[in-house]
Image 1 (cartoon, helix red, strand yellow):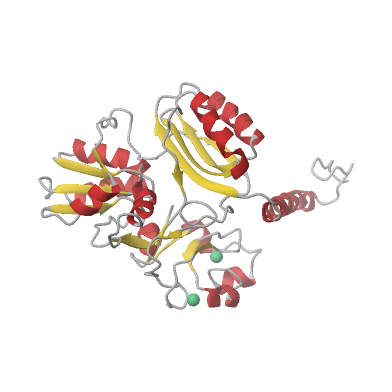
Image 2: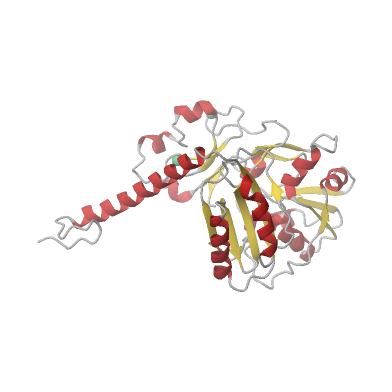
Amino acid sequence: MGVECKNIKRPYCPLIYCCSFAQIWNMLLHNRVNKEELKRKLSEEVFSRKTISLYRYFEIIDPLEYRNDLYKKWSTLNCFGRIYVAHEGINAQMSVPENNLPQFLDQLNEIRGLKDIPIKYAIEDDGKSFYKLTIKVREKIVADGFGKDDYDFTNVGTHLTALEFHQMSEGPDTLVVDMRNHYEYEVGHFLNAHHPNAGTFRDAIRMAADALSEEKEKNVLLYCTGGIRCEKASAYFKHRGFKNVYQLHGGIIEYAQHVKHLEVDSKFTGKNFVFDDRLGESVDGKIIANCHQCGKPSDTHTNCANDDCHQLFIQCEACKSKYGGCCSVECQEYPELKHNHYSKSKIYNRIGLQQESR
Ligand SMILES: [Zn+2]
Ligand SMILES: [Zn+2]
């Protein structure tokens, strides 16, 4: 006798496993179609979009309520993006329809905590950075792995403008430190920057402070993508006893914009990795990384086309067509099978020549 199947709405199913499988398959199919549909809609839009980012640390008592309010406001304005809300503040990467931008900016000033919040505009912007609006409540906007009282994260390092950072980085007794992850550093970084070769900020903040623990009297100049990680990193460095801690205000995004007007050569070479569908924007036009499959120059990050794998790695155009956008022959030929390396890693670490967990 069959079992009643709640999955595919048939009264009786002779094979219970078939029904479970059908449900999973339908879910996968639904998500995939949905994503492609959303991307198609984005590509057919007749108006343009601006890619922006913003963040602020401030206390949010009820992150879920705050999130729901933002979702209502920003979906009405047809905004897309990836936004994190936590008790400690907000971090948002967004794409806003250009026509709605003035209204969006006005509205920001009315939202609690966001008055006069600095906005960063992307330098290379095709308006295709996001295809949907996702606002998530997280425990923290930047996960550092520390408890609330482990260090005073309001006691931050001195902010430097792009020009100040540029000039000061040439000075004696000065260390420039990249607070980002190894895959970000790999495609672009400040010349002569120290980098902790970490896969997460949680590791980077400890590893960088440990590695430089004999250099506490030097000027330490920290930088990251947009500045949000350095707020915490600089406070942690001060907590660890570093005397002269500075941070690049607005991060690489601001530096890249200003360096063009400063009539100086960029000290940042390569691409600024960004966490949206573009996965990076070039700062000085140079390619400093290599394809992880054939070794030829390339700085195009991609996620393995096999959704079960989704590993982040660098792939050139030739390898993209050869492997169908996949990281390996296994992923290309056996999309339905779960391979061992899926569970071990989602990020290819070329610098450490090993795979690691995100
Ligand atoms: Zn290649
Ligand atoms: Zn793969």
